[in-house]
Image (cartoon, rainbow, N blue to C red):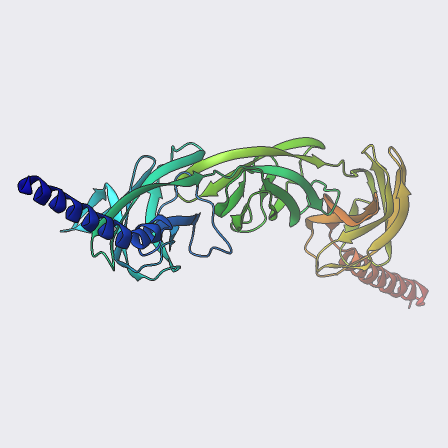
Length: 421
């Protein structure tokens, strides 16, 4: 009987003790239920680059690009000795140098030290992306290791972060030329090509190259290239190219390719531009009169018959005779408007230096005119003029011969008039 009473008393004491402990633990349990008193690290944001106000877009083939992962302490306790371990999967990779050789790492670890409640820290991982990676959003595992300051226990938790890869897609938007109409023989003509990035990712260090062929060539060294730098999604940029056009280029439409160049990626064709070369007025020389002059001639009128051989109209046509040092005079004539098939005659007044060596001289007829509102179009046609010996020595010799003959005749007459003895 007494033993049973003692047992009942002991059980009652133990029950009362358990109730007291449970009652004392209730505030602590409620405290933890509300997430208080412990550190709690969670990812807050992920972006490429180092500036959250101007994030970058990563694309296939990028190397040494920074992935920033912002982690926040959502608990009310300090997190000590925080580490963020990013586990890598294709197409992402990281390498480091050890003992003069490169080693490819499975993960990248970064330390953050201690993080106060409500604090944040940005882990920065330097990554590379395979050139053959496809566009899309990839999930990578981020392992967070730390110690809770109050409980001094090690915590390791894994979270997943979304990492996007967006490739840029540069396309030709429009094109124009300066001047608006180009002709055979033009030099330093400007091709303004506007391109747009229609992809979802930015393109860094973008350079465009114009594929020149046919009658087109560079106006100067590297004038077939244009560096645009970074092109963000939906951004339009202008690329200027300087070209020369052969004088013998036929009128019509030409197609020229445009290539995109960027580091770590091969050259790629982004499209072709259509370039129109307008027909240019042409002239033919029908007759030159006279085609022979003598050294020492002065005031010789030279007539040059000219025909318009093109299917376009040339206005304010001016012709200049580029004759060289032995020739002078009035060497320019304005022959006005010439329609297709028209014939005009240009007149020049030519003085020939008496010291000109008798031979055939090559000269140029330089044409300048206005066409379709475009000023200073020009063309040059070569001609030949023969210079004969001067008549001056012959005339002098004839005069001297005449004087001698006249003197002989006078002497002969005087002898006949003398009386005989």
